[in-house]
Length: 333
Image (cartoon, rainbow, N blue to C red; front, side):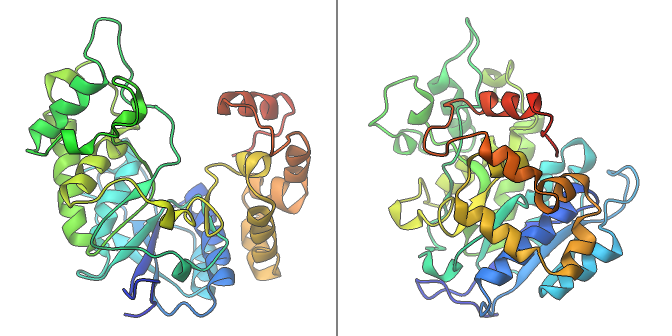
C-alpha cells in the first residue's frame, strides 16, 4: 500500500459501483480522480454488491463500465451483502468497508463525487475520524408533542454508552439542529475500514432493529447511515472537521449529488474537471449510454442549467433550485 497524505499516512480511496446510475457515476469519479491525482500510488477501490437474496436481479456493473474503471486503475472488489441490499442500498457504504484491506486507512467518497484536486493536499488525521458537514437538518423531524432534538439524540448516545454532552456544539442554541453532531455521509475516513465497519454495522443494526422509544415517530429510511455515523465517529474520538479539511467539499472534492445540481450550483473548476476528464472517446462511448450524462454533459444541456442561476446568489433552499430546473424540463437523473 502507498499513496501518502499530508500527515504522512498512506490510504485508499473507496466508493460504491453498481448497475445503473452508480456505475456511470463511479466512472466519472474515477476519471476526475485520476486526472487530478496522476501520481497517487494508493488504491482506488470500487465496491460492487454481488447477486444474492437481498437483491432483485444482478446489481453488478456492466462489462463496458468495468473496463473503463480498469482504464483508470480502479480495483473493483465484491461486497458481501448480508444485512441490507435492495431494501436499504445505502447499507453498501457500511458493508462495503469489509471489502477493503484490513488495517489500511481509507477515505470513503460517495459515488456522486468529483475529485478536482490533489487528495494529498488534505491533512487527513486517520486517528481522528470525521465526515462531511455539507448537510441540512434532515433528521430528526420533530413532532409537535414528541421529544426534541436533545432528547432524541441523547437516547442514542445513552444506548451505546457514549458521552452525549461532549458531542454538542455549544455555540449553537439549545434545540437548534446544528447544536447536535450530524453529518452528511458523503465522505468519512478512519485508520482501519474493518474496525470502523464493525462499529458502523453494529450501531446501524441496533438502531434499525431495536431503536430507543424516542425514535418511534422517526423515519430511518434513508437516514439510518447518517444517524449512526456521528455516533461511530464520536465513539472513536472524532468529531466535526476543522478548517484543515476544507479541501473536501471544496477545491479537492465536490459531492454534487445529481448532475442538474452540479451544473446549477457548483464551481466552474468542478464542472471543468468533469467535462475535461470524460471527454476522451473510450470514456464518452460508455458514459453516453446513460441519458442524463449524454444530454447534460455531452449535448450541452448542463450549460443551459448553469445559465439559469447565479452561483453568487443562489436560492437558499435546494428545493427552489430543483423546481426551477424541473420547470425547464432539465431535471435528468
